[in-house]
Amino acid sequence: MEDNRIIELYFARDEQAIRHTAEKYGAYCMAVSMNVLNSEPDAEECVSDTYIKTWNTIPPTRPESLKLFLGKIVRNLSINRWRSWHSDKRNRDLEVSMTELEDCLPDPGDGDRGELVSLINEFLENQTKTDRVIFVQRYWYSLSAARIGQEMGISENAVWVRLHRTRERLRQFLEERGYRI
Image 1 (cartoon, rainbow, N blue to C red):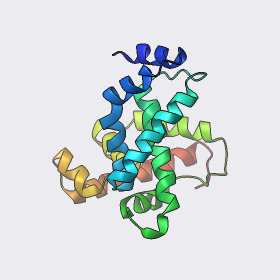
Image 2: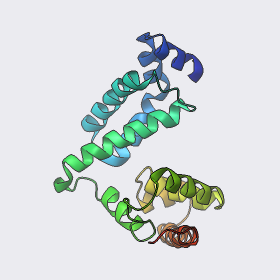
Image 3: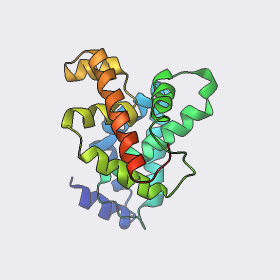
């Protein structure tokens, strides 16, 4: 079923919207959550919570991309769950990947978050496809460098080098636009 039709079902408050969402995007949501939590039962719960949150958010929100909308919800729910049991250190990749970004991003309290997100998107649009994919897989999907390298057919070391160089370019890009890092 087309995304626009699924969104219309949400606006009509038709519960079939959830069924169609689960059929079309359930595996995607599960993959996003598993990359953060590395726990199938917790990921399943976050995916279920994603459907509830989507039901409560549409309407009034009308997402341009249902897939990205769901991805953002499930990722945020998964990160919140991860933080709630952070002391267990169940997913070191998420903790480490967030630490890696600290040196190239401004303090979260500095400036307009929406502007920063737009600038990061602008920056990523101007990177090579390979660097963009590696960056997103590492910092959005929380994949390990080993897995990224395996999926892209390059060495783990090459992934680390590309990530380092991309973070340095991002830091420089943001500083040129007035952010203090």
